[in-house]
Image (cartoon, rainbow, N blue to C red; front, side):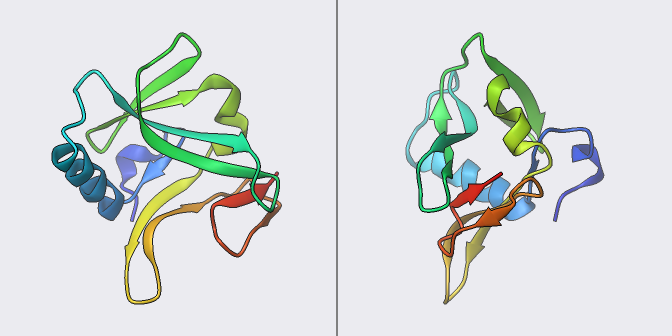
Length: 116
């Protein structure tokens, strides 16, 4: 669940997502000069899909620290991502990052594709 310190942030990261991101950074030895990128790209069965990975900051990026995680978001993607919650599920029926996006007018069954 998101904490109160995230209310002003563009996105929210749940505690489970933060733990998984830290685990990935440690296991894959991601350099400190790379940030977690949350973004969107065209494609997917609903029109747009989410991007999540480590990357270098560019001049088009907003940088926020959310629950200790430095996150970059392309300024052009803020419209699609404002208010999104990124979680990590680790259950019998699903494993991986999930996106709960209040801006999505429809989503795909896979959960990683949406339209706005």
